[in-house]
Image: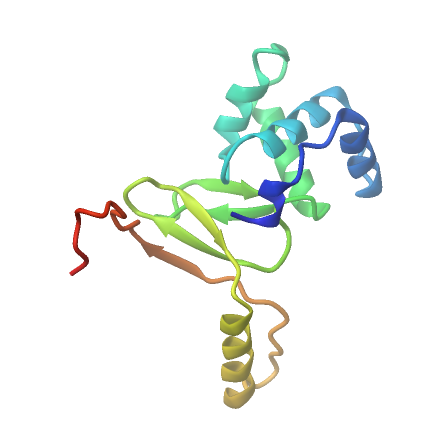
Length: 156
């Protein structure tokens, strides 16, 4: 669970302020799209956002959703994340530096923060001394499967 999961969903005024602070016009469609991103679980696709927004906004198109998501990414309100097989774009409202675990069974993307791992990566790159490159942040994409955590199942 990320810190963003523990915070209450922002109201429409807060969403308008967030758009304005990012230099974007706070249109009704953009507010609805941003609200859907905040409310939808996990890392939704544009299609999931579209299906969430469409009932209350029947004039919104999938193209409008994609354009809004692209503008949100460009403004730093979202991060674009590829899914486990790299075929679909998903969106992350947590723009802090963190890693992602991709469950191959459920297609779920789980946020993962580990300061010790970050320090190890920083030390690794510092020791290698790559020419003309200074890492500023790290984002690992780790694929795997959730383990069955039932008590009657013994780990291998």
